Image (cartoon, rainbow, N blue to C red; front, side, top):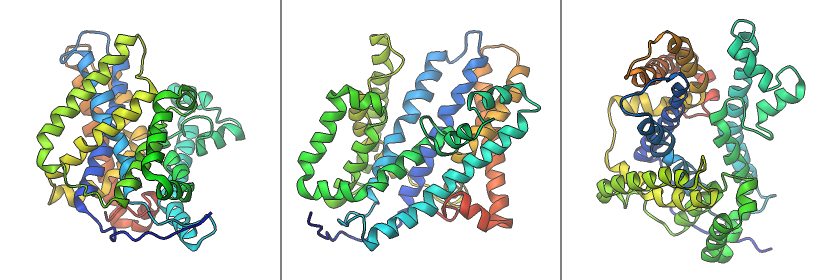
Amino acid sequence: MEWKTMTVPEKKFDSSVADLKALLLFGVVVNHAWAASQYIVTPQWPPMPVWNFFSNVLIISGLPVFFFLSGYFAPTESFSFFSPEYRKLLRKKFSGLFIPYLLWNALFIVLFLLAARFFPRIGARVESFQLENVSGILCSLLGIGRRPIDAPLWFIRDLMLIFAVLPVWNFLLEKGSYWFLAGLYLIGVFIAPVTDFYPNYYSICVFCLGLFCRRKQFDLHCFEPHAWAGIAALFLMSLALFWFPMKLGTVRAPAGLMCIFGTLVIPCWLGLMRFRHSGWYRRNVTPSAFFIYAAHFLVCSAFLHLVAPRVPDFPWKMAVLYLVFLAAGCGVLLAGFHFLRRFTPRLLGVLVGGRADA
C-alpha cells in the first residue's frame, strides 16, 4: 500500500463555522425538549404534530452537518496507522473527544446512583441501565451495545470510531474519490442489512463527503447568497421526511433515506452562516454550546420533570414546558459554564475538550 501526501490550504479558525456549530448543538437540546410531550393529555396550540415536526425533524436535521464539518476539518493527507501524523491525531481526539466523553458519562453515573435513593424515576433509570453491576456501568460509560448514559454523546462515540480509521478513508478517497463516495451511498441506500446493523450509517457518508470537499478546496461559504432559498428547501425536505414514515406506517424514515436527506440538508444549513453572530452571542453562547449540549440531558430534564407535574392541563402547557426545559435549564447551564470559566478554567477545559475559548 502506497501512502502519499496531499497538500491542502491551511485550516484556519472560522468564527462563522463555530457559531453554526453552536446553533446545531442547541438544536440537539431543542430536540430533547420533546420529552415534555409525555405530560400532555389535552389538545395543544400549536397542535402536537407541529411540535413533533419542529423538534424531531426540522431542528435536528442539522445533525449530519456535524459529521460533514468534522470530515471537512480533519487531516486530508494520507498517512498510515503507524505514522507520527496518526499518533498526533489520536492524541488530539483523546483530549478533545474521549476524555470529555468519559468524564460526562462518569458524572452522570455517579449522580444517577446518588439520586436513585430519593427519586423513584431515577431509580427506574438506574435499574434499566443495570448500574448495580460492573458490566452495566461499563456499557453506560462507554456506550457499548447501546447509547451512553449521557445519551446525546452517542455522536461523540461514533465520531471517535470514524476518526479511528481516518487513514482508510483518506486512502480510499485518494485512490478513487468519486467511485468510493458513490459506493458508500449505494451501500447506505440499497443494502438494508448494513443500515439495520448501523442505523447512523449516514454519518460515515457525510464525514467522507466532508473529506472529499476539503480535498477539492470546496468553499463552505458559497451557499450564503442563497440562504433564504436554503431555508425554504430545508423546511420542505424536513416536511417530506416527517410525512414519509406516516405514509409507510412506521415510526422513522428508512435509514437509507437518511443518507440522501442528510446530504441534501448540508447546503441549507451552511447557508445560514450568512447570518453572522457577533458581540454577546459569540463571546458567551458559542463557547458554552458544547458544555450545554453535554449537560442538558440531566439538568434541563430535571427542571422539566420537577415542574411538569405541577403545571395544570391547558392549551399552552407544551409551550410552558418547552420554556422551562430551554430557558430555565439552559440558563442555569450557561451560568454554570461562566462560573467554571471564571473560577476553575482548567476543569472546564477538560470537560469541554478545550472548546471554552472557541
